[in-house]
Length: 151
Image 1 (cartoon, rainbow, N blue to C red):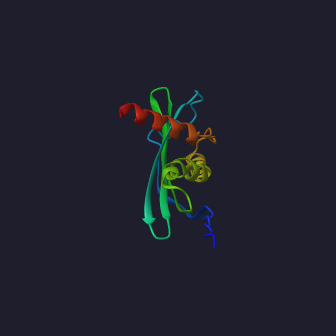
Image 2: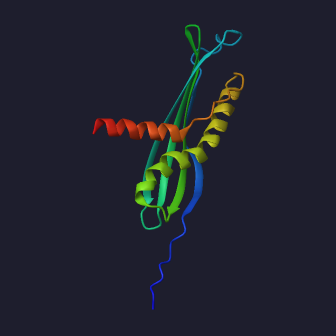
Image 3: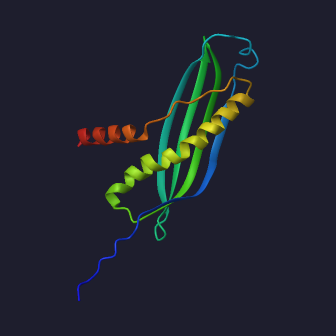
């Protein structure tokens, strides 16, 4: 009798989405209000991930998004949000895990972080800020290429 190989179906779910840490500063308020100059806005994003339950294949992924805005020589605001998620990832080859943890999971988390940032900025007295999409796939491929050059 031929052995039947049962291929395990891949599972990718998020169990919990949460804010791990949040910070808003407006060091030049209230002087900054009323200035109608164009703001220079910077956005940085970092990704961290770690297993939290190896048996059930649960992972914590946290993206840290930092947004700063300046007008002339004054800082308008600085926002930092750590948006976290607990993901279950089963039936995926180990060599594919970094891509899922650094591309798929951040793609799920980014809309939540974007909403928190926008709400904080508006509540801080500034106009709505729309953060451009981040191409996590391109970022991941760039990091892989940089690692290969180091070796």
